[in-house]
Length: 351
Image (cartoon, rainbow, N blue to C red; front, top):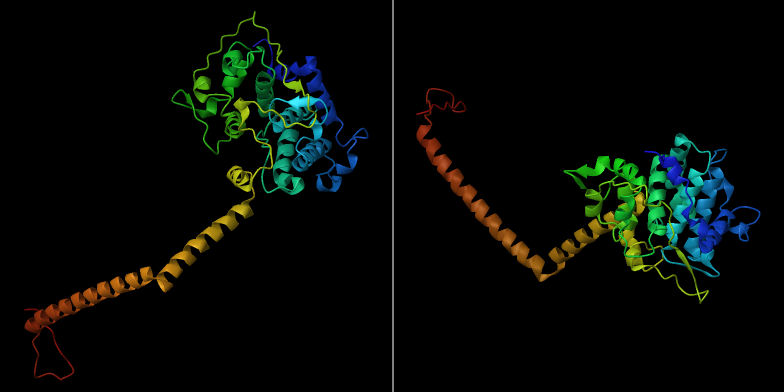
């Protein structure tokens, strides 16, 4: 491999895209003196202090919290996103990590702190923008993967992402990261998989990347194939206040505060609020018990059950009485009373 994963991850294919640059420059300003919304920055007292990632963690919390309140707050103006907003926030965040001086241990600690505090700081019961990476290598793999998704080399939107990756030097690194989820030559992404790609696929990429294509991926690096990414991600909007036109291929990447039913379906995951799950489970169990008790106590259904219960009880009691009578008859034939002994001492001899 002539190009390292680190070199691939540090590529910035959006550099020829003025709209993408404008967005990322806006995100760079967050929690700095150039931030027009500085008063919205998350209080530093809520972030672990004196760590090399403290300010970066504060920035991403502020971005996600602000966009939770106003989902297109950083997209105001002429920027009209093609994909869901969450994708860009994550992409920006991964770039910041890759271009920082953070080491492996720092990155792992950063994500531990992020997962521990995200819901309380963002003030949401639901993880609306899943950041699934846990290690620096995960960050690099997912960032380069999104290079191909957001900035494909072909302007043909129907171009298969995996077919593009197979001709790129990233292919070998990508395949290597999937070794732990290959079962019988197939990529299997279980719901609670800890693999970075699988978590990303389960959260966002099901409609973009077919796992069968990944399973059959063969790396065919072609030196003549450019690694440059040319396709524009952000379009200029005629209506500055119009809703983002999210591509149909990524309809699953929903970063909207939609109706509570949709949010509830997205809530059940390994990083979500344990207390909420416990409460739901408890209420459900109590509701089932209360419903059955009411049916039994106050309806004809309960009367029917009680009548059947008494019928079975009577049959059981009658059966037990008959068995006791038979045993008594058998015992009477086997028992001999020794009249010479005291009347209270009864000796039983088997016949």
